[in-house]
Image (cartoon, rainbow, N blue to C red; front, top):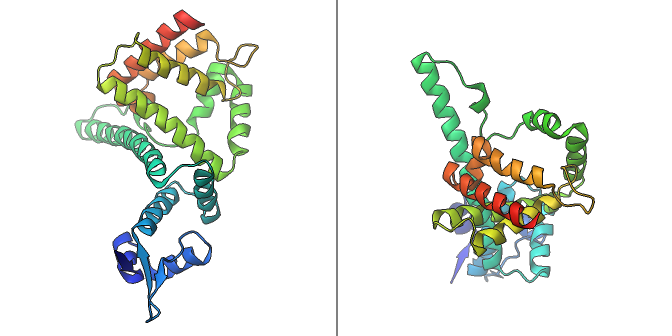
Length: 256
């Protein structure tokens, strides 16, 4: 089964001109061209277009989208694997949007009720630079500067890959918490090890001589996940964050 370029443009909320451009730059080759000169796309092309549009939602340029798709294919990731990664990111984005919604609702409630605005919660879920002050206050200017250089030095494709892996970890935590997994059990401790290894790759954070997070930093982050709604939203809410924090604390007690 296939669809004409006009049908696909309408379904995807884009234009025939855009789809022709995607074909011209090698992102979305047309499946076939009919005798009448019309372009047609099959199911595989539709899946690829969905992946392209999802990556564009991340803010990636067309060359960066091409890099991500090529990297996924080189790594042997099929369309299903790639879409699973996208789904993980979308769920993490859902948690972020839920934090934004709660923040705006609180602001409206306080404004209508004449109560004081809670400045510390007004920007939950938003991307802003207030983290710089927090990082510098907690761990020093060097911590933020090192992390900022590391992040800015990544290509858009590398940033998207890192975000997808971080979102996958957060989604796995939230899933385990929703299933009532024991924080001291093997599954939770494997997740804690992944959290530990993930933090090891971020420069500028408090680390041991061999480049791993210090015990104090690791357990302190776990406590912060619970106490700060901006972070607990990444793990499905306060209950999920408490599960993460408990598992991290037990991991630190046993391994660090």
